[in-house]
Length: 303
Image 1: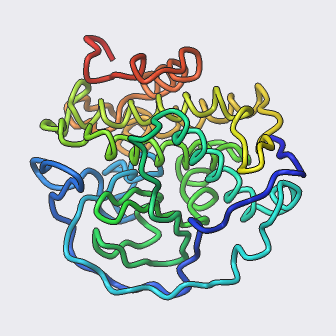
Image 2 (image 1 turned 135 degrees about the horizontal axis):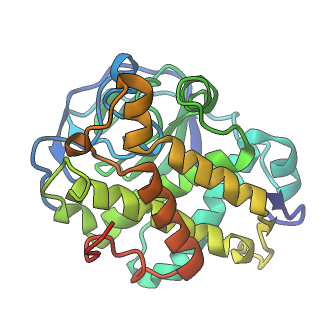
């Protein structure tokens, strides 16, 4: 993935939580509408991370609970991210560029229906959110109560690569952020209120996660066409290798792969996020067809 050195970066939605803090419990709130039977999707600790499928896109939605304390923010973390050239030399600035691209893509795709995320918040150790407190054990997630995406940047090396055997590469994080943005889009469109069943290979919870993968594929398809406020393309090149890394990451966090790695057997009835094959297939669907209609996993008879 290459960035346009002339593109301007917008850091207004990206921040770093300089201080963590405990928070409240995780309850069944679904943000803009409805409640989720059985509590929030995801949740748990890294001690159970593999068994409970608490991994990046697998922990991509954290249900609401008691409001956590207010974190403090490091205002300097992203201050130097000004251009695409900065994104080419800094992982932090690349994160800003990807967020900008996702924001621009979904603004164009949804038009007046779209509402921006409140913020992409990076943290280390722990963070307080309006969905409750979370630690780095949880992995990246979306909180529909405050419309925010939360990311411990150490997750990719510590969990995805070392514990789950996933790929290492710059576009892996971009895919993760695109998946989390997908959950925000579901929140905006009211899709989260359709979730009734939470386990099983064709459950609503699985359909929600696979749709977020499909939305990530939609963005990847259009990533080299999104522009900054001045009309400069943000990302100039997305290679076959980038797409391969995204597919490998999707496969690595399939429920079946995680179960095989941690418990030596696959139990489909406990799936919450879909198999490796399903996750790869739906990312490909978004990447190849590029439409909301093609990504309607809730209407699909076969996942």
